[in-house]
Amino acid sequence: MAHRILIVDDSAIIRHSIRACVEHNTDWEVCGEAENGKVAIEKVRALQPDVVTLDWQMPVMNGLEAAREISRIAPLATLLMITLHENLLLTQEAHAAGIKEVLSKTDAVSDHLIASLKSVTAHN
Image 1 (cartoon, one colour):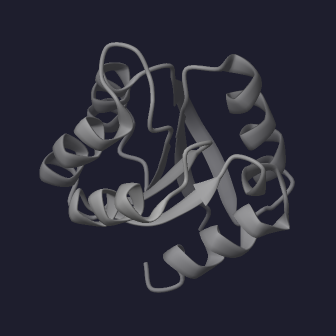
Image 2: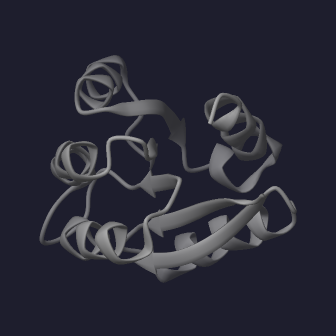
């Protein structure tokens, strides 16, 4: 059965790029997209994805705030952060918020994203 993925980023171009990368692999199905953390929480409730990719900096609610709430309402969902601002402090905060892995946006449209998805979903 395919893992269902919700893509969350304020950039439609980034969402489209991540979607294109994911849809080339039959192990995953994009079940939805959201442009900010608040919409992501609503979509997690409605769509019940297995995996949620989150940008860090977004209007309305950032990825860390959204991750904390998503971890609370959907504890079995696997969270990944995809950001331009990859650094040790952000990675530590992301892990504390329930995010399994932090990727740079340049890795998000490559085989590295697929490898990360395989890694974090291997036990689900």
